[in-house]
Figure 1 (tube, rainbow, N blue to C red):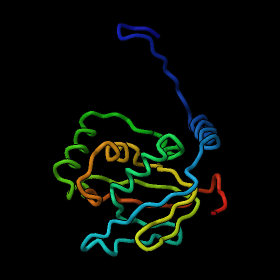
Figure 2 (cartoon, rainbow, N blue to C red):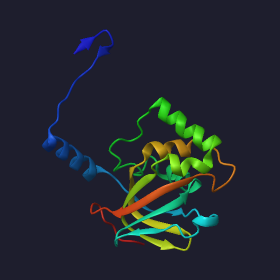
Figure 3 (cartoon, one colour):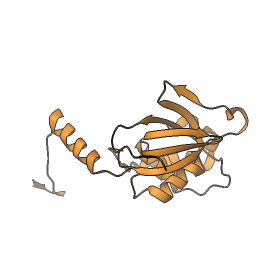
Figure 4 (spheres, rainbow, N blue to C red):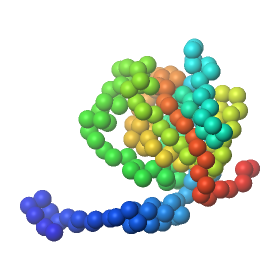
Length: 173
């Protein structure tokens, strides 16, 4: 089609098409083989692990830890399972940035956090070791955090939950 705004195409997908496309994407996707995130352990958050069944946890991690994952793995599997990637929405992006810069202590309340799917994880002191993982929800949050400079390692708390992914399981080192 063509109009005053330029050429564009419209595609309509049913549930079977969407499932086939996402299966193809996931089969071609790489996962981050191994890394770790640091727990946010300041003051009342020292015991911030909420276990959800056998395969999941919800924790608060250091924003600097999330920034590290982005810097190291953003083009190598970190967002492989995040269907939406980072959708630029100026008002949302500016709100996230404003909170990080001016109200970092409220970031946890204003933001839904991220979800990481992984083949396995284990808690090692104040770190969570992740194996065969990808952020499956939270690309926008992660990208905005990665673009900020921090005056403190624990400047922003970020919610995180991990659940095993059945795809691409690899052996731990």
